[in-house]
Image (cartoon, rainbow, N blue to C red):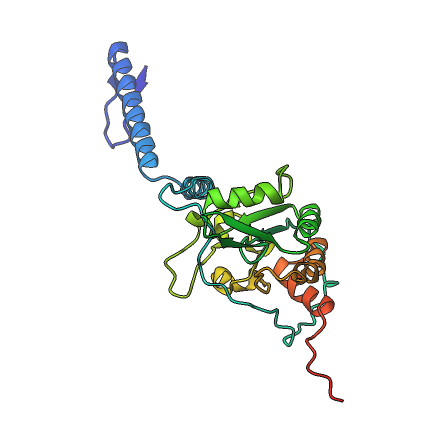
Length: 280
């Protein structure tokens, strides 16, 4: 076998078979080394997809830890954060139409997050060391209806886990009303203006989540997702939950739009504006 070099005046060279095999082996070795170097570079520089996947896994792990672990250093008594009576601002009505759904609209998940103290119950410490818990009027019927209408009802409380679990054992003895539970450890207690409950911990799109809470600071991280409710301190004729229920059911039904937009529309349609004193 003859190989002709392209240079001018080249003379034909003769290669013996052993020499040719040696050259082929050297070429394969160079190719193998090049492939190994390429793989090493790929391992040292992970793709963007792998980075996102790792970040997502870490976030899910942090969320699960925050929702299940209880601090053994915290006493088992109700939350002591300041609460304020907050009424829904009826004066700012929004005329949002829900009939504008686009051709690519789809049914969206609906998640309702509920506070515990002064929203569903009111707790008082007794001199003998016990805790007296008053359930807000209509709370059980309210929970049954929202649990049937929403994909998930989540508890998010600034109270400790031992206390909250005891209260929920009475409100939800069969554990069919609430899904996930977030306790004091999941709250931001260092905020200057009160406790903050960051809804991003749920891992849900913010357009699918609403938080019902009597303390505005709790939803200050996502104010458009907050649903204010007056604080409950044991009034026997309180009707706040039943008044709020039609608006929440409206949001649960209209899944072709953002939950925050549906909330504004439902409040404008279903909640009448506050009336001043009637003049004689």
